[in-house]
Image 1 (cartoon, one colour):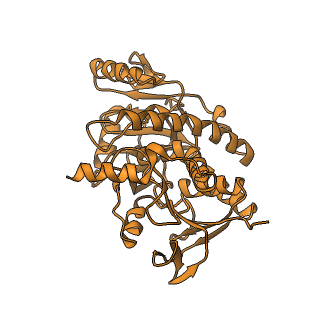
Image 2 (cartoon, helix red, strand yellow):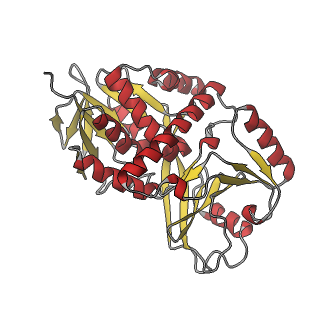
Length: 364
């Protein structure tokens, strides 16, 4: 009887942990390597909490790729079902325990209607809503298929589950790659770790590791921000997340915390804080400012969707580039990666080659 394949995953955020989960379910042996001192410390740490198939479109350029948008939307819907299953198995509050849906607000009714028409043509479940308390008096849209949950709590619980099922998580390690042999190997502090495959699931750092083995990358890091406030007493805030179209940001209530998160490539959190100070009723945000501000780099691909599948180097795979959709896509992406690696599935639109060609065209 052949031994179970040993897969090494670089990165212990939502995508790396979800990849480990899916591979363990298929009988593989898994080792996760994380350069930080804890799991869920990168872009996954201060996630907005939105699980939003409605937002399955590129933020990386003015023109979206219809095939990519459709593929990401389909993967997102599948991933939501997997997240519901996983949360039940992990003993976490189910997605159905929180009010369903997400809102999106606009500065005027014409913008909201144009967005509604565009999204409807793509098959997104969307309806317009008149200005009211849930939209802070602004015209908006409501996405009934969207959900929300605490991504950080999920990641911690999933890491514990990975360990219980025999997976190994090694933290605070200096990791590099060696592409000099028949297949790529991971090096820990310069020493090789034997494996049957290596998966790069380390967000924006994926680019650096690909370049170390002579591969160009179609993934870049785009900075975003989050700011946490205490939820004010006797508040009348909507229980569902509210997205602001103008700044690509959102307000979410998570376990006693009011989280503002998002923006796209901003050098500071000033626009995030200023915008929501204008949107929210006076007194909702503490005059002393947020309890915590955090910045991270979203891993964004040139084509606007994740990169999932093998690279030109034998034994080296990628699961990265999810942009603003990491929480939404994590479970589905982990399952797809496992199906590709162990079952021979075709990554098709998400393949490394397709994304690399798109990135090359973009830079020409």
